[in-house]
Image 1 (cartoon, rainbow, N blue to C red):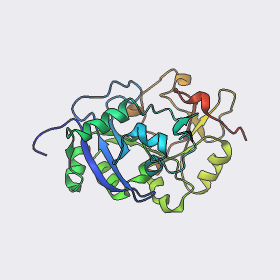
Image 2: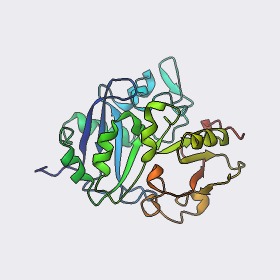
Image 3: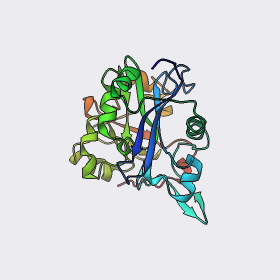
Image 4: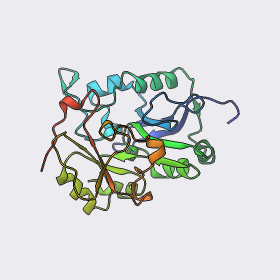
Length: 251
């Protein structure tokens, strides 16, 4: 890397979910994020390459990066409606994609040594948008190899193809039933609950949440790193713009 960029492509290739072309773009390399919850972590956006993320959610192409996640919403007459996902794709994901489209990103996707150096001594947030399982595990292993800490979450814990990702990812679940199912598959869990839902044994409230009075940031906590950390599972009350569309099983 000779010229320094604020964003870098670390993967440009087929999705591990459906084989279509996707991108993994690391941003905030020079200018830190203003999101107080995550601190100075490097966010990674996993995006469809052939269309912007807004178009992708409205025609279903986001399956390449999110598989059959139940937070994707549904498509009615060419529009995505009732979308529970907290990520507002027309904000940061769209800005990152447009930056890549106009050529403002560096590209080190063919150099895993450079990918390792990019993550060196940095804290990393895999999947600020998109599921980490869409990207080959070897890319993540390179990127995390010299990092100080990371967080990562996946909805693909039911799929045996992605069992190895439990080493670095939390299983993202929204019910106690799924929590126990994910645990039985060897995953640590991060569960979204309603305000009336109880914390279950082995869970602790996310300390970077409003219900914990923002006791710390994700960067300072560092618990959500899959089996890389031997911590209690985490739970948080549904939040964000899509929370009203969530259907949470209280079983």
